[in-house]
Length: 390
Image (cartoon, rainbow, N blue to C red; front, top):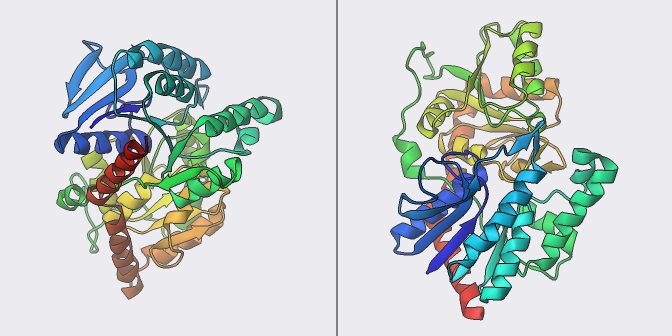
């Protein structure tokens, strides 16, 4: 099968759940003998087209900032979608899988699909719906929702990365659309081989160097400021509390300033983005991962933490799909987005006792559901179904 994936951000030059999903699906399909092409922004130096881990990468346009003033750039998305058309038209594929966000490239793929008579699958990493009004305000939000709804209308075959996202898509389009669920996955074998990050630190008697870890882009929606305030509360009874923030982004300076204001600069370190092995090593060296995001399309770091035997705390927010991955009280906790609630949940997990072992074992067992090997098999079954139907 000759398959094309379309998304402007390309792993490993841009690191995120959607990027990693496409990379892993593409790499594993190519290992099975399929001809896999990725169409994205040219983040690399050299030729526009290159071979990378068995896949053919197509640099559609020059690298541009994905974010402007903390928000996804509309001009970048428009340029990418316009430049995509002639590049994608040059070749014929059995199937095109386009990631819906940031939307405009979906119209390009639909046009190519019609002209080339090629099946096009729309992969929904998240559905914003009325969140557009929060993100852009009422006037501009109407336009954002209109574009998202238009994409939902033109799509024939849809894949959602979670039941949560499928339900939100059905709320947007009605139940007439065919929506398959194909979750993001993890490489359980790779994660099992990575050792905890103990270098340059003194591990405690439980084999951990961090009490809390957060991993993600430092943007407002991640609510890392609430986590920092929770650390400040925990510090009153646990002066040695240690929190690691893995990530970078437009909110970093404000967050660093907040740690100084609250006097937790010794207890909390912002490490910046890490290579995958380093990140997993830090997660393994932690007692709990906290993800206080008000918006998540899936929450890759949740299942990665589970694979490390690390429970997760996330929040009850309307647009946070990560809460759908957690069984409250079994492999983590889902609490209100409030520093006292997060602090209480953290204290439950970091205390010693047999309950800690049970919650870690439950997290490890949950991770088995998300092994990439099974997900790739399901992906091929879906793709073959779409082809047979054509």
